[in-house]
Length: 244
Length: 248
Image 1 (cartoon, each protein chain N blue to C red):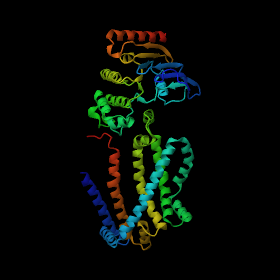
Image 2: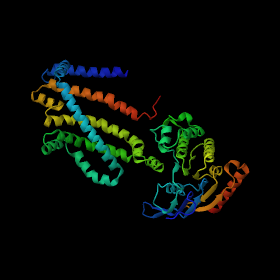
Image 3: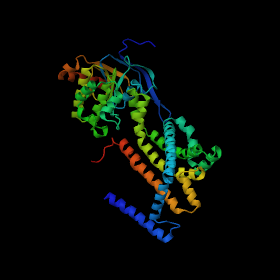
Image 4: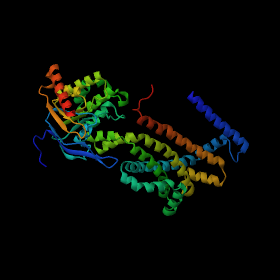
């Protein structure tokens, strides 16, 4: 199999993903979805709830092989994944959870990560002793500690209160700025991704297809409030067009 | 308060025993003192330590083999449908075969040997261990499995850090019920076909109608098992559940 283009890109070419329902009929979850994410780029997938975003992510990270199409991970394919739920091992401490996923991470790297995410004093705590917000930070720390070629986040801030979500988003932005990593972020919330993404793919309802590809030119750090508002309007518009 | 209640309960048991001994007479039910005296006599001659040691080593050997095999087979049957389909009829057969039948057949087929004795005990305990561990394997969290997969954890790491801690409560349940079952069956095995051990001594005492000796050996062995429970099983359980939040 020949590799198309830059081997450091994430290439997703899904032709179709369907399953048989209990009645024996075929249900198409994903339609023709093709996109690629350049090295170090943060791409966001936005779509209505239930359009198959999580299914698409499961295909990308290799948890679901039952689909028509090809997924080409960047170079070595080291993955850092943040699931919708933190998915921590309750019987291991915060630090053990991170180290089990990232055995090669140095103490200095972990110290820095725990520092940025405000987890320093929780290293020896068990996940059952953490709040939801803290548990999600541990999941973020774990995904970054593996020093991934591809970072995948599935609605990492869902069900958090607004203030906490904003702060975590800022922390995530800081992390991907400190060390650029090819990132695929899934969300149903336009506001959530504007401050983070370099490129936004808008998905339709089921069976999901890419209906818009919105690149965002300015780097995250220099985006002004006006620009953010403009991007927001553009996204809302294409969303409105699509649902007509 | 807790200690006082326990002491009161034990005192009540001793009082009932004492009263029963007065009613039934020393031949049917010897007094507690007589039994303690018998324990001391057996201990002085060295017979008690020898027989307890022999029985205990059989218990430990049979228990370890049964738990190890039971964990492996239960895990396989809980995780893989094919293994479950193949193993299930055997499991139903073993579960419903009376202990006595297994023991007698083992002795007939393999002779009155140590191997036959241990195999009979293992075969009695094994199906129960399998059933319990299989339940645990079926309840394994798929989300954690997926997490381990995407982070590329090795098989050993997944078993040690993801699967085993989830099985721990099931293994504890299987161990606890298993230990008491195994020692009871070891006694029958010894009674029927071994020249030593607590079961053999009780068999001899039964033929001589020596109730004192029967109680002496039974109580001494219960004490041993109680010590194992307090000094081995309970600390282990506390260790594996250390991560569970406790009420302050």
